[in-house]
Image 1 (spheres, rainbow, N blue to C red):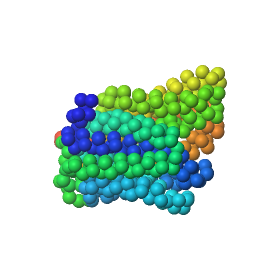
Image 2: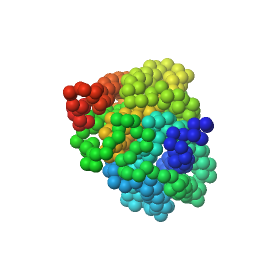
Image 3: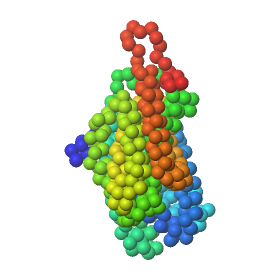
Length: 427
């Protein structure tokens, strides 16, 4: 609580954290109610609901690079307010849109604005919190999980009522959260200049007015983003893999499914700041990637080896898996953020972070089909293959990031060798 009152970045960071908490409360509310809304209010069958959400997630992939591109030219604060207002408008359209064809562009635009907002929030933190961005990220994760919990609780009340007016009230409550978040962000200030970063380290300063390098031509950074996609699979494992494994491959009571989210929420709130402190700085963050992979391997081994026992063996194995996947999430949320910033050239950071944000968007679109179509279909062997693959790729990611960090370090005084460019650092 003391850190929330005095976060890195001071007043502006405190206001932004409050706005993000309100935003995530609305997002958690809609996430808990959206499938049932599309089923019982919009009268879509299960196949169309899945297709609607899948296509919308694909559209959301474009949100991060678009936001990064615009943030290199316009103030982040105004763009973030615009993203919230755009979602406010799409929630209003949701009330009057009927049928799959009408809902698809509305839901897709909502996903695009959501991914853009998350990238812009990341940029805001790097500019306001500076070198303490890891601590800010940990505080944000704590606030976000609390917001999700509040939103899910409000959604449960509306879903228990179950009337058409109750569903509409949930949409309006979500829209209200976006309006309040936009109003709060309007009270913040932003450092002047599209690429200015507060509390830079000494080696980041630059007065070069020429355009920064393009992330799309930086093979090293693109490799980082590509390898970051499987590092983000903890989200699909927790929300898709473990619940479906319990339901279809064990005799465990279905009532244990919510326990996965309870374990996740409690551990994130309790441990995020401690994990962040242990992975502070780019080199520690790169080291955490390897530990993340080992943790994911252990997580995937738990349901694989626990499926051969009885009911309580399966329950225990899945709860262990929920704990391990949450630990992986805690490490990934900090290391991915820190490395995305540290591996990007300072004067082109906005566009680079926009590209980095695509890894989570792609995972959200490709992760669930991977889990349901390949991993769960293959049984215990599928879990072991997934865990081994993520662990192996994490070691590749760790080595690649350490090499790029070494290449980006300034040359010692008097050294004759030139510092490699970011584009060549990992090629």
